Amino acid sequence: MSQPLKILYCVEPDDEALGRRAAQHFVEMVEETVDARGRARIAISGGSTPKATFALLGDSNQPWKARMPWDRLELYWVDERCVPPDHADSNYRMTREAMLDHVPIPPENIHRMEGELAPEAGAARYESELRNTFRLEGAELPSFDLIALGMGPDGHTASLFPHTPALDNITSLVTANHVETQKDAWRLTLTWPVINQARSVFFLIEGADKAQILKDVFTGTRDTDRLPSQLIRPVSGILSLILDREAADLLPPAGGRGWAELPQIQADNKA
Image (tube, rainbow, N blue to C red; front, side, top):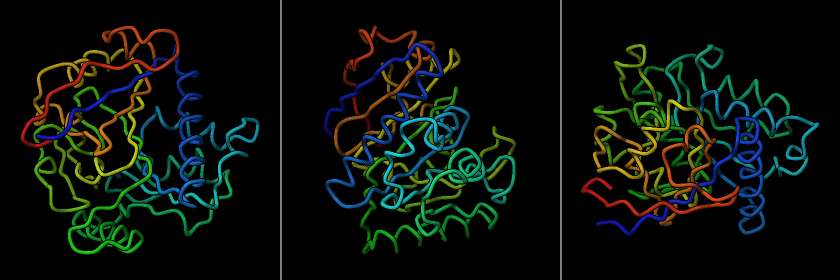
């Protein structure tokens, strides 16, 4: 059984405040990591919630663009749809338009998933990219400095969807996952052991439609096949949640705008 998990969460009053808190969190974590290790390797997720944060990070009228040490940042993706990089559904395209086109990050520091390849080939290519850039040997896992996750109303995170084969993959770094409930499409995703190996992991979640599933995932009975987000148990023993008021509606009050701690949840044989 794994070590106890401390879940820390903060609650912002609306989506604008949520985006600003997330932008601040990104910059603080990257600054701290660069000061300690000289560079920061982070993996990001797609979706409408992080898009607003990325736009803030790329906005010259906001404080975070100037603070971010872009030349010391290595950017990876948690997951990607199996579409070309210019497709409307591409996580890379969303990030490029919202942030990358507006910041001085060196092109060689951007490590995108190649969704235009056949699914298994795309997964193999990205696994090779991770092994090469992290200089991994054998069964060694990469240790990202920061991983940012979202959560769907069905309890999925990354492209780890309920009752899909990717949930059982504990040997690969990256896997292709066929998701019938999402346009009957293929996706590429980091596997959950890779996510858990990161030094810091946080969820960014907003909206009333996430309130019940958020409560089920973090305070309910463990059922990782139905609620894949329960697989996320970082080796650090700490998981952070940045939430808006609507998403946090069914959780205990956080108390002001500081951090609160949820009761510990129990591990199962997958976590």
